[in-house]
Length: 448
Image 1 (cartoon, rainbow, N blue to C red):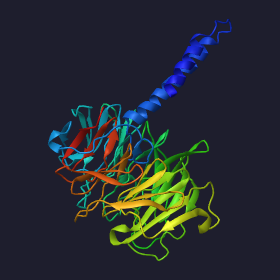
Image 2 (cartoon, one colour):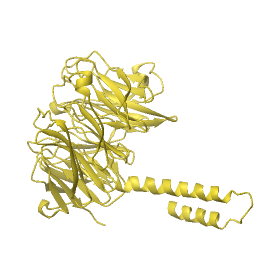
Image 3 (cartoon, rainbow, N blue to C red):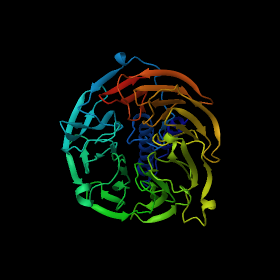
Image 4 (cartoon, one colour):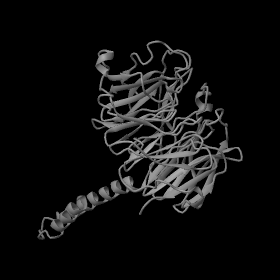
């Protein structure tokens, strides 16, 4: 429909009678600008996955046709990776970018659409992971189509051009001190129009910092410290960039507080921290990231891995809530997720819990529309699920990738064994499914 409107608009412009006012070129240029914007927006949705949770930061796409079952020996292509990393690939303009250690060094790699390695850039000494499902390359790269931004557990934060040349590099551990996280850093870079933003939430000085995307210069740094029970101030969840009321805002979950920051200066616009942990339970860090549906943040919390799940629906506002009740729309203590981040698709939130339970939730009420489960096993889910054209893709740590229909109801369609551990999230782009395993990057073709 939109293409038909554009064609009609073009015919109207091109058939306009000539006048001496000299306005014809301006009208035609305006049409070209409109056309380019639509083409770019369509291309972004169709062919790009520029950051961990996709172009809309919701872990889903409504466009494309993706594979259901496959044989890992007959995939479109697979390439060996130089070392163990857990980051999810970023994709831009038919190029795939990911991070991995290579000979003990932090590295960024680029592949073309056929799986050919284009370049590999090393950035400094690796700080390897502690957790069995962790690595020094946990954070996923992000790209704005001009540069690729990557962060590593070592503290290295860098921007590279699309040809792999280093534009700038800094080390946030050296600049701001070591992190005190029990486990491995997992927060990915967030890109605004001007800034590359990083967050550290741990026991000690927690902060948000914005760096000029072109030069790497620090533009602002603000503290974010809260008193919590043991490990409650440790955060592994990636913030989300929001566009509201004509400005860029960053919503951050961690330290048992949900905060909204003005991206221009980092200042707190709104904060909500009431009763996330009223019993002051220890060892409740923020691992899963939030998902935002309209102005509602769905906040996973608690220890679902230990039978103590929590899930909250919080309305994001422009000023502090008068009280806890006015900000919280709903809360549940019978469902939630500790590690996997929920996905938002067609206005519904999809949760894959740590032991494989699956739930579809209305974000406005918090009520479950349906619930089901993947087959039980001794392994858990660390990868975050994605929904592509009505199908849910969820990777278990032992390398089994489940595919289920969730368009209206749950129906398990396939179990695909990748033959190696999978911690990164699946990436559905342009009828291809990319899966980053512990040893290989796989590309599986869907229907054309």
